Every structure is written in structure tokens, then in C-alpha cells.
Image (cartoon, rainbow, N blue to C red; front, side):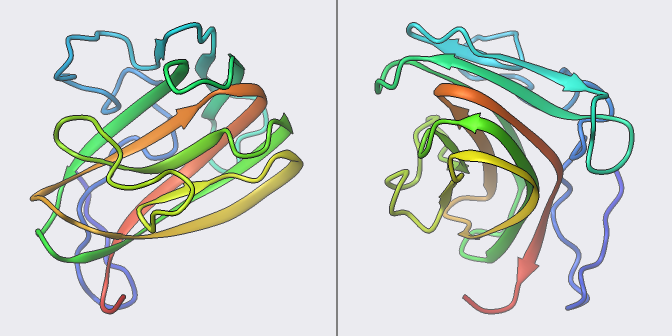
Amino acid sequence: TQFSRPESGSIHPPLLNRGFELGLSYHWNPNDKRGYSTTWKNMGLSKTVAESSSILPRSGHRCLAIALDSPIAADSFGSMTQTVSATQGANYTLSFWARADNLTAGTVRVGVIDASGQPTGDANESIDSLVLDGDSYEWKKHELLITAREATLSISIVGQGSGHVWFDDFEISLTETR
């Protein structure tokens, strides 16, 4: 496990395989509490496909590519998570890069889920989740401020609707103030 030091000098919790260089089966969704063995999980009528792609990554040789094919309904979506250790009550910044092609607006969210697998707040209003813009765009950096409510943070990528979205270079770092 490698730790890095953000500019503030604090060591942040390790987010492993953050550029998806190792494929999707390493460090994303390990030991899922609901018994799933696949890395990308589809619920309801979702037919979304996710893969570690070598086509146009932002950095390195691979990135996460998601082809969305899901009705926009509360019970139909695809998702993946990674859980890292955290200090309860501490503030963190989650950053990542994303690009999109014909993405349905308001249908892809990156955020934090609690130990039971539920989002920590409303997907559109919580400071603990970020909804990606729809349409088509090149690589854009996104940042999300998070407060650890438990001794772990479960970073979640959730998608429904249609279009394509790519992710790369996830990082999490301790933030001094909120």
C-alpha cells in the first residue's frame, strides 16, 4: 500500500487502483456485504456495462469506462464501491477526473455510502455526493468535500440513464477545514 502526502502534509487514506490500471476486480467491491461477486453491480432493469478500458485514459494505460443502459428509476441502476479507512469526524476531499459522451443529465453520481450500503444524503443535495453534468465533454476534474461519519469511507459510483462516462485518477486526501 502506498500513502501519499497532500500539500498540507497529512497522510490520506489509501484509495487503491485509483486509475483502474489493475482492471475492475482489484480493490473495488471486495467482500461486498450483500454477497455480490462482480465489480459492477446492476440492479433492477439496468443493463449498464463497466470495464477497465485502454481507450483514451486521462493518465496511465487504463480508465473506468461505463456504457449506461438503464431506465431512470429508483430501483434500476449500476454501481461499484471501494471502502477505505478514515478518522470519524474528519473532513476529506475526494477528487477524480471524468469525461462523457451523450450522458443523460443528473444520472451519474459519485459519493459516499454508509455501512449498510445506503447513500449518506440526498443524491442531488448532499455535500457527500456529486452528480455529473449531462451532455458530452472532455476530461474535467471534480472535487467533493466529505465528512467521515464512521471509521471508514465507502466511495461509490452509481449510474443509470444512457450515454457513456469515463473515470480516472481518483484521490482522497485529508482536508484541514470544511
